[in-house]
Every structure is written in structure tokens, then in C-alpha cells.
Length: 294
Image 1 (cartoon, one colour):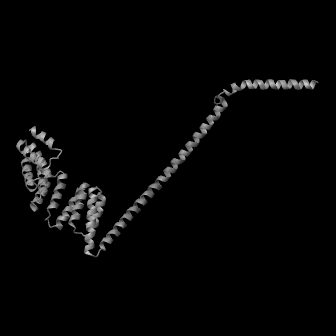
Image 2 (cartoon, rainbow, N blue to C red; image 1 turned 90 degrees about the horizontal axis):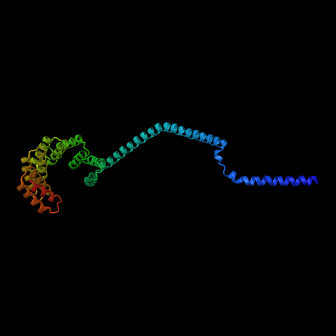
Image 3 (cartoon, rainbow, N blue to C red; image 1 turned 45 degrees about the vertical axis):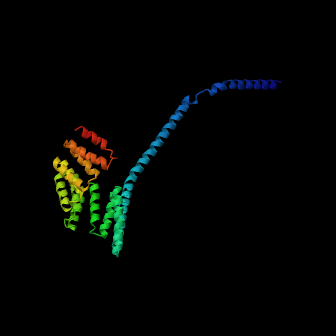
């Protein structure tokens, strides 16, 4: 009997305990576990360990990078030297192939093709390719005047004026100082370098060898204008117009020099001519206004 009573009391006590626990469950679920001291300590330890690990990996990566850079630089240098060597070999093979052209017809055809290629390279401003192609031509025909002229133009476009001038001076020896175009190119180089007196001399030489080319006269007229010798500039430009009466570029220069000299009638005369030969010229209205303001 006593045993049964004890069992009953035990069961009731257990039920009471369970009831109390159930009552506390909502409160337990609201406890912020992260706020417990032991949890915070554990998280701090984890963060410290994680930070140490990250720093260790970063230090290892920096050391590996420092060790690999000299190797990488060395590899890049070797690769660059190897590439240049291959390029040299390729050039030699190509030029040997050109030398083996036995027929004069084959040589002429090859040169013609390479000249076209070099001009396209110059027009697209691929000057290194143009230079290589022109050197290939001179390897086939070492007296090709057009190739030398184009090569000098490549150097001028790259502002390598010394090489350009040397190339043209060598060409003068080949042409026995008798090529007007060479002197004109020398004049262009001198003008770009600011040596106007040398440019004047070169342009005069080109005119003495070929006095039927309006372009040489126009170049000289521009030099005289830069030298502030306006009367000479006008006279030479008028000679250019005689050679090319409907040339818009010459007319444009003559209008400019007329305005600079404040000559209304002359400016109007050349503007009327420009309007006649090139009515679509976008500068006409501007030039008209400048002349009206004289």
C-alpha cells in the first residue's frame, strides 16, 4: 500500500516537473545564446584562429609571389629574345627567298605587290610593317627609287628626321642630284623641323628641276608666308594657280594671303573663283565674312 502511494507521489512529482519545464520553454527560446559568456569566448577564439589562418595564407602567397617574380621576369626575357630571334630568322628566310627569284619578271611582280602593300601600311599608319616591306623591296632591288622615297616618308611620319634625311640624301646619289621630288621631301622635313631657310632652298631646287609642278610652288609659298614675306608668298602662289587654275587648295591659300594683306578686291576675286570651282566648300561663308570685314 505504501509502495503504491509512493509511486503515485512520484508520478505526480514528475508531472509537476514536466509542467514547470513546459512553462519555461518560451522563456528559454528567447534567451540570446550569443550573449552567454562561454559562447562569446568560443566565438572570439574562432575569430582569432581564423584571422591567424588568413594572415598565414596571405604571408605564404606574398612569399611565393616574391619568389616567382624573378623566375617570371627571366622567363619573359627568354621568351622575348626567342621571339626576336624567330622574327630575325623569318626575315632572313623571306629575303633569301626574294633573292632566289631568278626571272626579272618575277622580281618586278614581287616588287609591285610589295609596293602596294607598303602604301597600304602607310595609309593605315602601320609604319613598322611598312618599313619591313620596303626593306624587303630594297633587298630585291637595291636601286628602287620609289621604295627609298616611301621609306623616307615612313621615317618622317615617325618623326625620325635624321633617318629620313639620310635616306633621301642617299637617294640623291642614286639619282645624281636630279630628282625634284627628293628635294621637295627634304624641304618638307626641313619645314617640319622649323628650318625655314633650308626648306626654302630645297623647294627652290625642286622647282629648278621641275617648274611645271604646282605643288612645289605652293610649298614654297607657304614657307614665305611663315617667313612673313607676304609679297613673295602671293607671287609664288599665283604661279601655282597658273599651273593648276581650278585647284581649291591653291585658291584657299590665295584667299588667306589676300586677307592677311588686307586686299579686298583680290580676296573677292579668288573667292568668286573658289565658289565657281568648288561650290560645296564649307569654308566659303566663313571666308566671305572675313573678306567683308576688311
